Every structure is written in structure tokens, then in C-alpha cells.
Length: 327
Ligand code: NDP
Image (tube, rainbow, N blue to C red; front, side, top):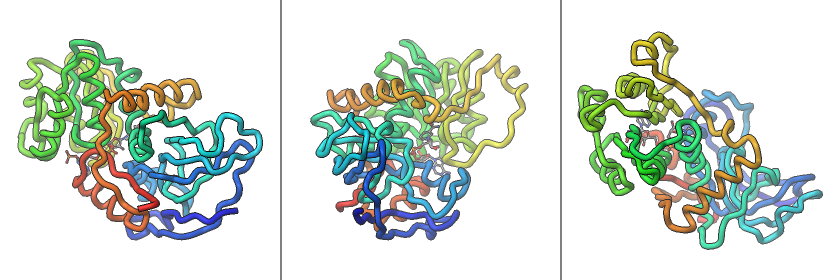
């Protein structure tokens, strides 16, 4: 038994339901590994869970990803040893000083990759990875629309799309954010707060309809994303930072030019251990060799978790925020 401090959601609601509490953590059970958490990632899915958009029984500990050092292993665990550096994503209850995790959600962190960076890279990095390799396999010469391109997933998408020889039309809510997207490799920049006809601006910048639209903003951008696509283009709605997209008339895909629409989620792209390892190896490997830049936009102690989410929900962030238990 050990003691931990964690960020709890006491009931569905706004940020006032976040509580930082100290509690017991049992020794790791069969197949489990105990980890001293160096950093936990701040993600939009935490907001959806806290609000009850994704219903979770309360109280629960917030946080879907993190990285840290193994302090104990439970019976039957042979893949990880005390002292090893590990990271994980898609595993709830991560905003804590100490966690017990099933060994199958852990991956090793390569030498030279800082644990905070590893925590920041996992959920958004594996998301950008599946979006460009599997949901729509980006090819050389493609043109991709990336919304909120200075955000966590956004900056990674820009880098991964351009690394495949494709062009990015990036949108963001301020010129400062667009400058960040440009630094990551985006060739065309659109401030969607200042244009009246977003789809028209995208088509003008691209010179044609785009091959794929990566849209994690949702409600505010969905119509423009669809209208930006070339015939038989792919609409990838992967989130709703501005709100969920309302019910949809399928005939719009026909009228738009035999379009494709998908609403993917990370869990279905890392469900098999082999696929999870492949994506994590590629993402953390790219971080280790310097070809993928992880931009940490803010570090917060657990006691200031509400401030981190206020910044994320208020569009005040760029890159990735992390909670740092030791800070
Ligand atoms: P970001 O860092 O991208 O933050 C969200 C950004 O969305 C804001 O910075 C803002 O950028 C933009 N935005 C536009 N309108 C709003 C609004 N009304 N409220 C808040 N933000 C708004 O977050 P993440 O990288 O963590 O996540 C991006 C999206 O990806 C989210 O929708 C998330 O749910 C989704 N996601 C989906 C996954 C999946 O597998 N399906 C996995 C991981 C994330 P700007 O000011 O430039 O407009």
C-alpha cells in the first residue's frame, strides 16, 4: 500500500467539480505495474468525461495518458522491471502521483526522450499517426486541410502530413497560432476567425478541393470542411472542440461529390497490442531522432489542474499541456 495524490472528478460538471485528494493505492495486482508519474497529459477527452458527454461513473481520477518510472510490478509481469521508464495512453486515472496500470497499456520510453515529452507525445501523437497512416493514408502530392493547426494534435498532424510529401492548408484562431503552424511546415495559413467563406478560402489557397480534411474542431468547421473537399475526398471528423456536430443528412455526401465521411477514435486504432506498439515505436522513435517536435505549451502542478483545463477550453493554449505531479 502507498499514498497518492490525484485529480478527481466528483460529479459531472464544470471545472469546479475537480478536486485534488490524497488516497491509498494498493500494491499492484496480477498483471499490473506501479508507476511513479512524472507527467500526465491534458486532453480534450478529459473535458468530455468531466462534463458527462462521455458518461463515466463518479468519482473518478482524471487523465488518459502519462509517463513515469516503474516502482513495483505485480505477479505475472515479466515485460517491465523496477526503474524502467514507461509511457501510456488510453488508460484512465492518470492525473496522479502514483498509478497502477495494466502492463499491456505500457510502452518503454526510448533513451534520450524526456518523460514529460513522452507523456505529451502519446495520446495526441498516436492520434495524429493513425489519422495520417490509416484513416486516410496521406501520399506525396496530397493536399490536407488541418484545423486548429497550432493545437496539440494539430501541430503533430502538420508535421506528419508534410513529412509524407503532402501540402497542408492550416487554420487557426489567431495569426500567432498560424505562425506556429507555419513553423511546423504548413504551406497555407487561414485565420478562420477573420474569413467569411472558409471553404472558399481553403479552395483558393489549395488551388483545388483538398484530398482530406482533418477536423477536430467539429461543430464550427464541419460544413466548411465538407465544402472544401475534392470529389471523392475524405472528411475525417475526429473531435468536437467547438461542440458536437448535429445529426447529418447522408445525401450531402452525394451532393458534395461522392465524399467519404468517418468519425474515428484512437481506441479502435490501438486495440491490438501489436498495432499499439507499432504506433508508439514510430511516434516515440521520431521524437528520439528529432524528426517530430513535441511542443509543450504549459506545465501545471496537480493542484492547478483546473487552470490547465480553463486554458485548453478557452482556446488559450498552443501545443500540449502537461500536469507535473512533482512541480
Ligand atoms: P487542441 O490543443 O487542438 O485545442 C483545441 C483547439 O480547438 C483550440 O486551441 C482552438 O484552436 C480550437 N477551437 C476552435 N473552436 C473552439 C472552441 N469553441 N472551444 C475550444 N477550442 C476551440 O486540443 P487537442 O489537440 O487535445 O484536441 C483536438 C481535437 O482532437 C479535440 O476535438 C479532441 O477531442 C480531438 N481528439 C480526438 C481523438 C480521436 O481519436 N478521435 C484523440 C485525441 C484528440 P484555435 O484557437 O486555433 O481555433
